[in-house]
Length: 172
Image 1 (cartoon, rainbow, N blue to C red):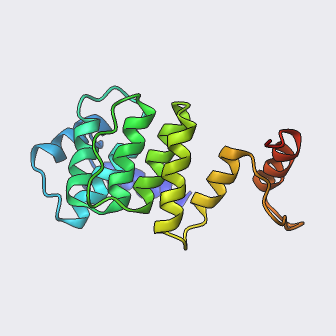
Image 2 (image 1 turned 135 degrees about the vertical axis):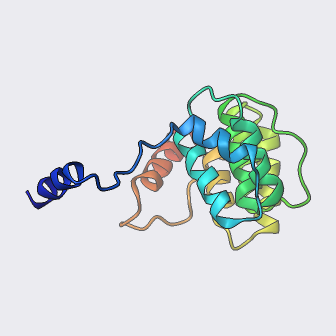
């Protein structure tokens, strides 16, 4: 109720009211026309617009993801790979700056393309390179349908499904 009174008074007395926000597409285009990828606030705004526009046909989505990847860390590289993977685009060459996140995206892309042997090799190499990251071993176990050695009774549904899948399709 108080909000309505304040709103009515603001219109009656000519108080400034915020202008409508430009569309997501226009806002992204405006940001890309004046790129400042080393500025954290600029990166955050671009990232949020990209998330909102992810499944649209905006012509500059890939170039915006690429700009963030070029000037950012491994998570930015992984986001570009994820965008390309979701849109059926070529992933490109492995960058020397890529790390665990990007390796995971590349492995998942191979799996999605049914290149399970190369996917297995990528996950095995990544598991050796980043032994602290359990995602590579877990994905290898899903890929090969190997059951985990032990399943906690409080395990997540995904882990329970993994055990059932492995039991139904034992490897020779």
